[in-house]
Length: 635
Image (tube, rainbow, N blue to C red; front, side):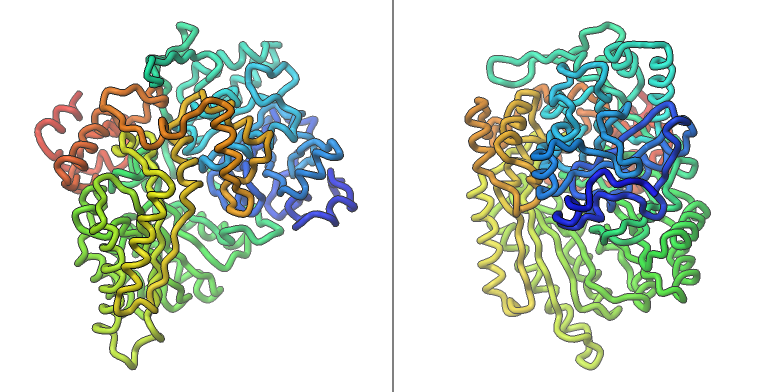
């Protein structure tokens, strides 16, 4: 039995001590003497959140398949333990071995959202690792980051030795092989980082210089060594069916945010919503085969004992073999009372037939994301949904026995007007009317229940809306009040519940999303003055950030409300994700000037550039939109 790093005295005085003891079913323990490389895989948030993240478990599976490597897990200690560790000078440790993180060869972090940036520093601080990569020595682990936030790594680039751009299944093994070989040959830390920077998809920030123009924008960015690439190219898994997958997932001691087996049915998306970063950075859409998914499902349920299977993707209803997969899951797991959940559904092609396959297992609310309240604005964002499709889909859900629907919308989108905001309330009212008009009284499952949730729009890198202006927090709140007041004027207002997100956190997210290296000092300042777990409303203190920006000479408006020209050099322009900037520009113009929809990837190829990856939907026979697109593909 592994000796816990923390004493009983400490564990008995912190909330949920099971977060820190390891030893869960499915976790992997190896002999330290038999491995050459030790990798501490960190999710910089609390255990329950990190253990819900599929990507982290994929990396854990991939690295632990190697006999020469031991990958262990690390999470952010909750503030109660963080305080104790600082006071008693206890080092942060990995769960499997309980060894200090500083003893590892690598410290990897997956960065899923911008408001975790102070938690990066918490991890480094508690591990005894210098914040800045330039200050680290041969005794420090190589700190490597990955995940969606690294598609603009510049605000946090100073904290990382390496940044991984793409999917871990692609070249992570190449990086481990390189490190092992160079370490055995006695290579220095700096030499290892230099060689790693030559691997496709690996960015070594220390070896790139940035210069700025007089107006504060970036003039240029280039490597200091001629053998490093000017453009860091994203990498993707060459074959999803052959890629590592956690068929025997770790079963947490504590209830995670998502307590279920996760079946990733596809990666990427065909839709091209202009606000959606994931829809661009995970192109092209690639599907897993039915045979592979059947095998994964059997293994995961048998090994974990979960009573729910979630089908994971950006748009589950676009998976071509969804009916066949649902039939298999229900036929094999219904007797075991395993529920099948279908997140990321598009209301336009969510049919009564699909609902009928899962309704006998469990009834819950259905969640859809129209994103905008009017047809004009849905066309601007390229949602590709008509009001008729939304209401028809809701009607199908109601006829299938559901009476609760959740709608997600955004506020502050490009070209948005007050009419668009009020349209959210009117769409919710029309949905109520569909329920009462189309479902006979004797078949109703109680009163209709509509939940409307709005978030505030944040322009993200590598989207057509990366040029868009944001609004100030007080303006966002006024937008939400408009929606709330309009809902209160609706006939069925008591059946419509409205929630909206915090505006201050949205502004901070926007600053980091399109920020540059000059923000790193403000992040350090904020952490040293008490900022941590900023994505948790109980711990978020925007006044700390306001003080940090003022102390470090950062103007938040420069990163949020400033208008950007099409010729501006962005901090992330040195990254090639496979989708071209020219395509993004065309989509920006189609959104803000033409206000027209671009057809999805299965209807027509729009020439975004992802065809260069040589796989996925790009090779399923889509017809080019026009001759220009055809020429782009040939090039």
